[in-house]
Image 1 (cartoon, rainbow, N blue to C red):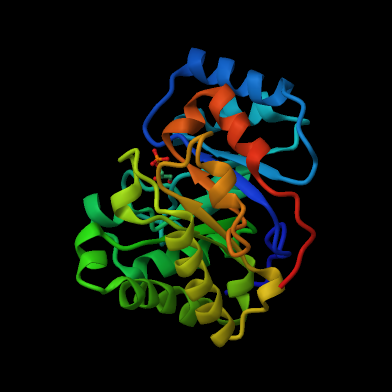
Image 2 (spheres, rainbow, N blue to C red):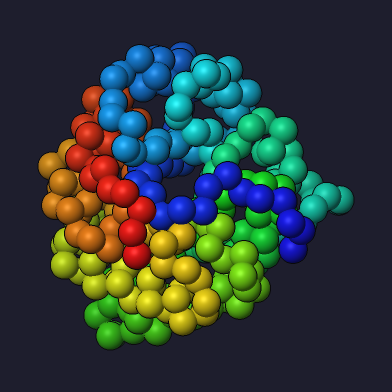
Length: 262
Ligand code: 13P
């Protein structure tokens, strides 16, 4: 682990859009122009994680705005013969502030294991990029009463590898069964898992005043207020609703403006 500082370590309110594999040059332009033009309170940070080919376009359209640019994945390697991979250092060259690692779609569709996710988070931090480390249980795991154990294992891999640097990451709790289903976790379910994540991180020596934990999974303008009203939830990682400027801005508007606390 190199000593390069990621941008922010204080617990903060943050809403990040994950565009997944959506967008085209024209649609991206309209969406980003609408986001940049919209008035908003300064209390909530915003980010968009765009597909790799659109990083340059998004960087240009976001220049001078307070909206942070992010990517959706990075390689666990620094450089080398890894055809198709994109390194954290390359993302840094495009001014990425965030990168998602361990999204459940990558874990499920690309076989990403906990150790690989942890290595990706480490590569990102090495390059001064804040990794947004995603964890979450499947519906079957929840029904089997395994939620705490699954999330504990996913977390431990990254907390053990990052050690004292762990407070420089952002965590996202995304129950797999809630993603893209139109059925978010209830505010109470999300609050309970967020509290578990926070206490596990604290157990590993992370300062709770530095840890930001987002909720993701069918966040929309109708449920964002209740989810974000929970004291363990610091904001959202938004998929489908981040593709419509009005919906994404309504979700951002629902985010609390909190001063950093434990
Ligand atoms: P949806 O908001 O479309 O459910 O996606 C959530 C997600 O996977 C964000 O990373």
